[in-house]
Amino acid sequence: MPFPPRELPDQLILDLNDFLNRNDFIELYRSYSWNNDTYASGFPGILRLEVQLVKSDMDKGISMLDVRDVANWGKLRNPNQIAGNDIVLPPNTLHTNNGNPPEILRLQPMGPVCSLEENIAKGVGPTYLSKVLRFGLGQEYGALDSRCVRVFGKGDSHTQKHNWLTIRVRNDGYGWYIPKTQGNWPSGYGIWIDILRFFSNKLPDSCPHPPEFIAAGLRLKNVWTCADVEMALFTYASQFT
Image (cartoon, rainbow, N blue to C red; front, side, top):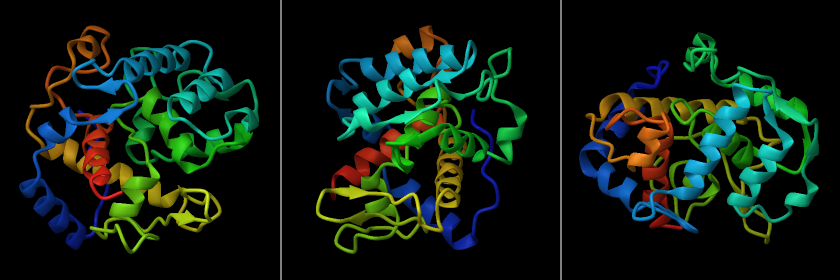
């Protein structure tokens, strides 16, 4: 089970509990779809990247090659523009030698974000930085996709349904994105992580993971992770974007 959330505002907790009571997370998770990644197919692309990045983290560190693989999976518009150091996260940033998340991530989950920003010079913004962490440690991280910010955060008054996040999206005519230069990055991602932790800790042990994830040691049977919750919320947000 993920670390418990850090302190959240009382009104946000009320809103999250109301959302929890009104929505079927199991059905949202099963309905997740991105390219070939569907529940019926066993989320093969997600499985491949999780295996790859976890192995990298516990070996030589998460690499620029890993970042580009994540970017290609997510259909980033200009993946050839990504540049930076060969290793973007040092070994064991996300896992100790026994495979568990380091205790420091309990209170400082944004530490690896800073490391990624130091080692990736250009080509990726908040969405793909968060995706690298999501694939590297799905137990504790979920992606912060622009469509989730449009629905749960700020910047798109036409699709906003909830006021959970301070972080903001923009559309300059080429599609929605999350500006890295805004003052609410990366702190706004920290709020998102605590929301994912909140749901992960409140939901009963009911997540219907494809068996391959359990066999690979990436999930405990039925236990929700931050990445699983994020997939459900992505499905929810996709109804409005």
